Length: 78
Ligand SMILES: [Zn+2]
Image 1 (tube, rainbow, N blue to C red):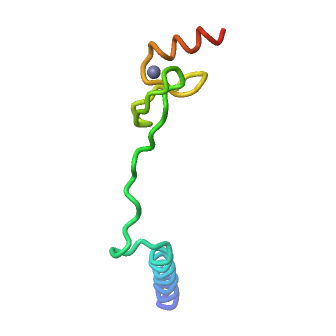
Image 2 (image 1 turned 90 degrees about the vertical axis):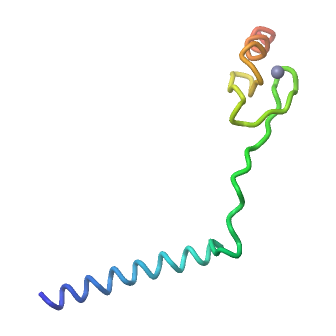
């Protein structure tokens, strides 16, 4: 039983070391923090206004600044 516990401890240690190694290799150091999640800007398909991706309304023809433009765009395509 003692051998089994020892083996388990070695396996856990190896897995942990592998994870730490991967994190370091991927550039997760404090000196090089990952790029801040900057919100992408998209253009309204109807009027061309630029707005953050999170504020855009997805529609059938693309992304829109407002519901009115989404409706206008979809009606003009019909
Ligand atoms: Zn618009």
